[in-house]
Image 1 (cartoon, rainbow, N blue to C red):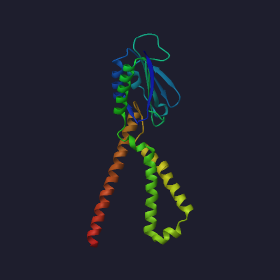
Image 2: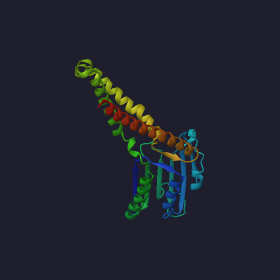
Image 3: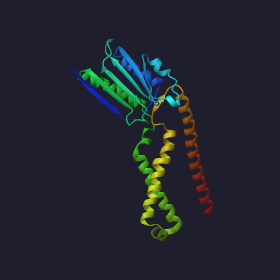
Image 4: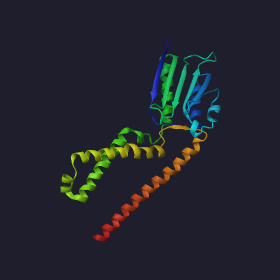
Length: 241
């Protein structure tokens, strides 16, 4: 008895040429006829016959890849409307899903096997910093900014200044500002330093390398600033005591 499966993944994944080749090696183990389609941000669509055609695409910013569809059939035959195997890879910074797997004309064992293999591939392609794109991170940052302001205001104005100087409306407005900073400004910076997804092919290789350099500089600067702050605090405390 044959069946079908449609399964989606929402992990932040980064796909480069090596990742694509490893996926094709997996697919080749069970399917003879493999064909490809790429879709770009300008709305264009290109059908390709080999993985070499895909990874040789120039992938400029204005026409960068936002979706790759890899379809396969068990045997060389007329192309089906619904192929036996189809995996759609998305730029997860543009889509809610990063991968959608579709299986047709398979028994339960085949469905379980290919579903597991694809899930292993997606997990191995997941960015190590995937958690920074979770909404809870920015809600938490907004709350931290709000309480940091309250602590600063209390230290500067005292408890009476806190209770008498800030109305309920002011506190609500400040909370909105804190969440705006978290969701708009901080999130935008994080998305630049830690790309949520994409296809590192062609010109996008240099783009990712540039972001990685900027990220390293920013992280090193933060660590150095924290170390200097701690050392300065220890020195000041030693002098005062």
